[in-house]
Image (cartoon, rainbow, N blue to C red; front, side):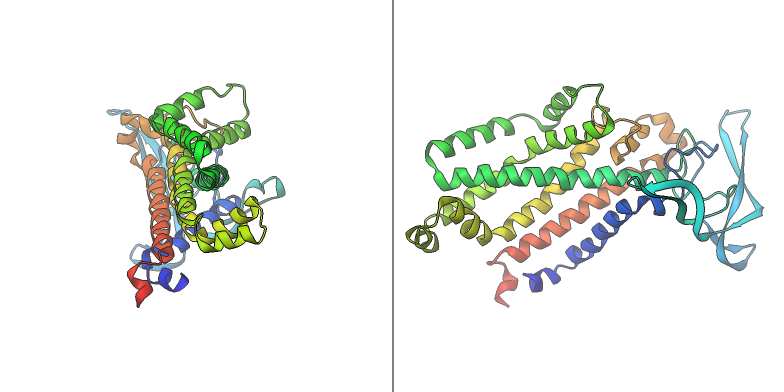
Length: 352
């Protein structure tokens, strides 16, 4: 399986992309140059990157410049001017806003940044002058973790209900399949909206997070259950299952020790392809304002600022969290495709 997977170059590259995203989410406190709620006093400041060329000369380390803002008397828009006379070298492991890693190890160290006063906004600032890049880094914690937690719950429900349905058949199979059909007949977004709207308004951010995760899981387990049921129907009459029964194995042991391991690779591929759906679902709910809301941070919450057309005309960089969602979903889809092809014993690579 690994030999065939390596031939899928996009899937291998996607592993590195996904690993980088999750490492960024884990160490968001150190990677983000600013606190996500810190206001720089420069609202809607455009992205400003450090440079190594100043007046035609190469400089090292890269430098950021000072920035000043003025009000255009005709359009009443803020106009930012770069002051090249003020240079701020980019520094590694620089002191900045205080933070702590999940409530542990409080400190003020950041991976990269410049001294106060330098324009170091890799993806600009929002309407309150908060650094968009830092907010995207912190928002990746919820957006990426909700996919893993949601799929983990869906995996348990899908394997248990789908396995029982396919193994025992009869009225059990009929009941589970009708339940799946009832859930799948509802349009996804209206169903998510209805369930999310039922959450109490006085819940904390953590409670809403787990509530949204459970909602997405309760709706998203049906496809995996169908896959598991189909595999159980095709395997329950195989000789190795009959041998296990004659040896006195219990039904639970046959399912857990013999049936599930025989197609675990297919389950892994299905789960990998389900994670993007969870991420997109959370993004959609938060974007519509019925999922997570500020002060919680996720990519969907950040995209709420992009709902105003006038704001987008002034600050198009507020759409950058959407680009990050696209990259993440594509990476998971490529990874899932690679795992699915590698797990398929009838693929052409298996005959080479």
